Image 1 (cartoon, rainbow over the protein chains, first blue to last red):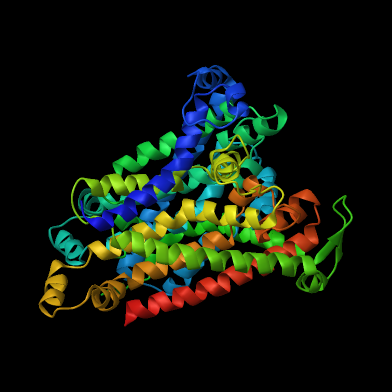
Image 2 (cartoon, chains in turn blue, brown; image 1 turned 90 degrees about the vertical axis):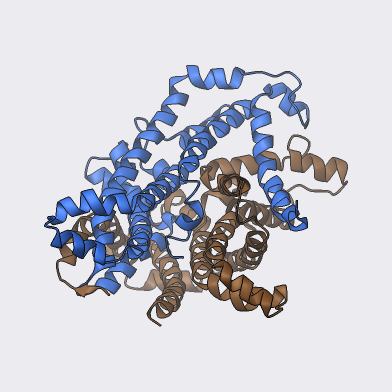
Length: 265
Length: 287
C-alpha cells in the first residue's frame, strides 16, 4: 500500500458514513432510534421493510418511479441517437446554435418549469401519468444524451462509414449492424445517465403526479409529514432507493470515468 | 472532418420536436405571465416590465441571489481542488479501480430528497450520528435548526459529500488518458512531482475540468431539493437559495407575475455564465 492511498480511503469513508447510518437505522425500531444514537442496532428488526413490502401505497411508489424512469431512458436514448450522429458527422445550417440551445435546457432551473409544466401537462390530459413525468424529464436528459453520444461518436473514424457504403450497406443497415455495436459503451453510458438523472429528480416528478403515478420520493415526504416521524420506515424506504442506482452503476463500472467526461477525453 | 450536409436537420428532428414541446411552450407561458397581473378567475391585465423592475429592486431577491452566488462560489472553491487531489491519489490500474469508482459514484445515485432527509436525520442532536458526535462527544453546541452558521456549514458539507465525486471522476478520466510515455519523459528530465502536475497533468485535464466546473456551476446554482429537505430554507431565511425562494413565490403564494419575472431573470443569469464556459470550451476544440 502506497502512502497516498490514504486519501481515497478517507474520502470513501466520509462518503459511506451517512449511508451506513441510514442503513443501520433501517434495521432499528423507531423507539430505539429515538432513544439516542447507537452504532449498531440492538434489536435487529426487519419490520420497516415488511411494512413497505406489504403496503401498496409504499411499493407502488417504487413501481411508478421505475416505470417512468425506464420510459424516459428508452425515449431519450432513442431520439438522441440520430441527432448525435448528425452532430458528429455533418455540418448543417445552425448546427452549433442548435447544439447550444439543446444544452441550455440542461441549464434551466427545474424550479422555473414546475408551474408551466403542471399547466401544460394538465391541458393535454397527461397530468398524473407516467408518460407526463417521462416526457418532462426528457427536458434535461435528451440534451445530456445527445452530448454524451456525440462525444463517443466523434471517437469513431469517419472511414468506418465510408467503407460500409462502399461495401453496399444502406444507411439504416449500416447504423444498426455496424455503427451501433461500435458505440455500445456510449449507449450504455448515455442510458445510465438518463436513468440516474430521472431517478434522482424529484421536484418535477412530484409536481406532475397526484395519485396514480406518484413517485417513491413523493410517498416519502407525505409519510414524513403526516405520520409524525416514522424514522425507521423512512430509513428503510431511503435505503431501498439506493439499490436500483447501485445495480445500474455496476453494469457501466468500466466506463463511468469516461462517461462522466461525456466521452470527451 | 465533418461534411456539409443539410440532411442533418432530418436526423435532429425528433429531438427538436420533443425539446420544443418541453421547453418552448413552458417558457412562453412564463414570458406571458411575466408581463401581466392577475386577480384570479383567469382575468389578466397588461403590466409591462413592472414585475422585472420590482424583482430586481426587491431586497428579498437580492438577498437570495447573494446567498446563491456565495453558495456556488464556496462549492466550486471546495469541490474542484478537492476532487483533483483525490483523483491524483487514486490507483490507475488494478482491481481497486472499479471498486473505488462505484463507491464514489454512489452518493450521486441517491434521489435528492433522500439525500436531504438522510442528512437531516444525520444531524439531529442525540438521534443523528453527526449531531450526537458533535454535541455529546466533542461538546460543541451544534444545532442547525437554531444556528444559521451551522445550517450553512451543513448544507455545504452535504453538497461536498453529494457532488465532489463528479469532479473526481472527470479529473480521473482525464488522468488515465495520459500516455505512460509522458511520465517516462518527465522522469528522465528529472521533473519534480509539482512540474509533472503543472505541465503534464493539468493541461491534459483542462477539457474535463471545464466540463466539471460547468456542470457544478449549473447544478449548484439551480439546487433546490437537497437544501429544501435539509433545512427548509431556515433558520429564518438564512439558507433560502434562489430556487427555494422562487418555489415559495410561485407555488406557495401563487404570485404568478413576479414568480415568472424572477424565473426569467434567474434563467438568464444561469445562461450567461454557462455561455461563457461553452465558448471557452469550444474555442479549445477548434484550436
